[in-house]
Image (cartoon, rainbow, N blue to C red; front, side):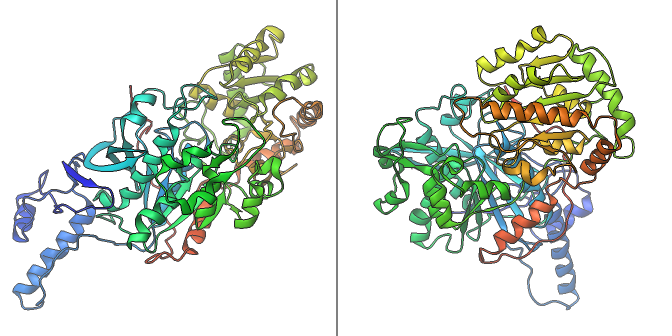
Length: 616
């Protein structure tokens, strides 16, 4: 076991193993250059079935050097470097409380699941760091242990690791994560139930931020074909949402002040500004930060929750202390600086720092109508019009609706909460259900909304179904079998459901907010309902009317050339992470971290199998 103190890593001797399935000739060659008994991976990582191709190339080069020495062609002795970089690019470390598919409650997990492989495909060395919320059977103990001061205690932290789709997936292991969340990675990451936070979240995420900063320096990772060794100091950190907002603060006070991470930079990405990490002002002492950072945290609002009076605001500090601020769509970036209602009282800070938006992509491997394992008929843009009626009939039968391929079918998939507008939809359904239409609503969330959802079948037995449970196969069936996808969000930083729907030729009906404005074009790839009232305390009758009116407008296009053209337009788009990854690359290159170079135009590595491998 390797044990180090935070920021005081002394690398162990690095090794390259010859154990495995090799010919006697290859073993002889390894012996010739003194590598017979060395080990390919950092102690504690799972042994590989095949020798890392990077090391094979290096060893072959070494043997060639030996051969040239014997013939007098080479006078210098070949010594493999401890860090091997065979490609240009950047060292990029994404830090987030969620990473799909291992842990995911929303868009944050999707982004950290999908964007890093796209960046790796462009030739960059990419790591994600997230808490080890569960017993992930594909992530192995590196046996690297560090000590971190959290509050007034010293905590011991371990790192687990796996290498998937060109990305080093690193998981911070500590009971403060695993004991709370084990077996509930879809619902208990932030609190025991929806709407309730763990009381020690400040300590949990303080520990996490410090551990994330250590990972690039202490982990000797050798799974990549192109890179090996620690990432080192020339790193770009991508901090995501309030849980990682301490990262730029700790970077400055614990590292840069001591000459470490001199060139490293931090980009702070806002996925949902509604969650900011507001705590009592007295809690600043728990963070072990110098007083010089206090002003970045100080925050006053007019609310008694979560604490009355002066507060600290983690997200505000993350915004002010980072080198660049970004969010997940251009229109959402505009909304955040437009006023206190949509900027949730951080609008003035964001106008000061500036913010840009890059729209998210989607996982085009998991969501692929030509290969989706959950749908009975596979299809593409040329066969969509023949396939969708069959898929609609299968969906209707699955949920118990009358089977009729000629009736327009609307789907809704999402969390049952005010942000997603499920309460607005519930009040709007009676306003349009008398039309020739069916609707299927799938989601979980607030209990009163779940009960409201389950009443749909009783109220409209031939017209509506509500399923209040997490059901991945049914979600895929709705995406493929519905004609329209309803997205009535009060606000939506980017949104993924509309991307999934368009990929499958299901035309979105969306509220005009955030990323829904950027991704759905009225009359071309979908229908815009207008912006909704962001006040979550009550349902605005104007918004109810907007849903009913737009649904009626949409279903009049059913069976017409206009809708067929929209379906084709939807499916013709490249909705992958490839385009967004290039925009991210340009942003990160502009930070001028030492050693950063443009990447290449590469293709993502497709997942070999289902990667959500949490073991209860």
